Amino acid sequence: MKRDDRNRSVRLLWETPAEPTRGPKAALSKARVVEAAIKVADGEGVEALTMRRVADTLGFTTMSLYRHVPGKSELLDLMVDAVWGETERTPAGPWREGLEFYARQMWSMFRAHPWLLQLTNARRMPGPNATTRLDAAFAVVAELGLEPEEIVAVVTTVSQFVAGVGRTMADRVLAERETGVSEEDWWSDLDGLWEHFTPERVPMMARIWNTGGYERPLDEFEFGLARVLDGLAVFIEAEDRPLVRRETCL
Image 1 (cartoon, helix red, strand yellow):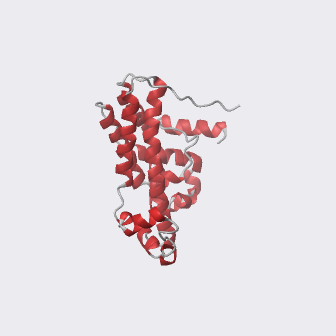
Image 2 (cartoon, helix red, strand yellow; image 1 turned 60 degrees about the vertical axis):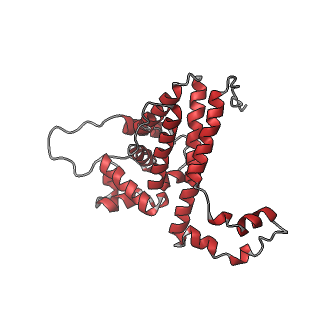
Image 3 (cartoon, one colour; image 1 turned 90 degrees about the horizontal axis):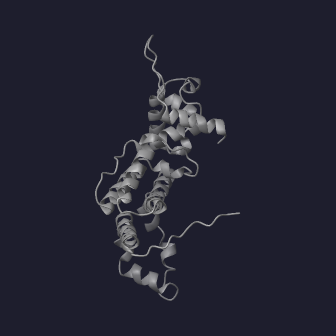
């Protein structure tokens, strides 16, 4: 994204546009464009999102959208921050409960809008909703007296876990949308594969398979979140916490 494009996103996300004091109220607005775009992405996936598709949904011309949102890149930034606005800020309290709350808010957001995880997060312009949610999570961890970089690392660890599990969920949603076949049906209809999972070739997998381990999967999110928080507790409670800094690439 060019510098001018980045600055446009900053203005759209952070600056409240002046409302006209005279004349009829505009039939179209930035908020309506963003709302319609989210509906398209929710129903058809982000790959179906175009300015023309959003315009058709609203019953306006494509050019009319550009008066409110200059392009798809800026529209995506607005959409991401809008769905963050559907989440709640982490309340003050014990760090573990706070981070669990933050994680569950993220998880609910990703489940409602799996297209979020199809986007590249690198250099995505942060908006006011996303940053206030992150700030509140930082505030809960800050009560532990950690170093500033440790606060960032703790919250980032939780965020990356939720995004990782969410990305798997989003891939399943996309595959089902493209094929019309559910995840369960796709795997169950692979008799030709399962006959190769013999005790001689993959003894542990065969054992797990034959004892029903794959039929009783633990909840990926719940199990993983508890283990991540357990691990962070060990780090937080340690008397000596060595910092592991990122290496500088030359």
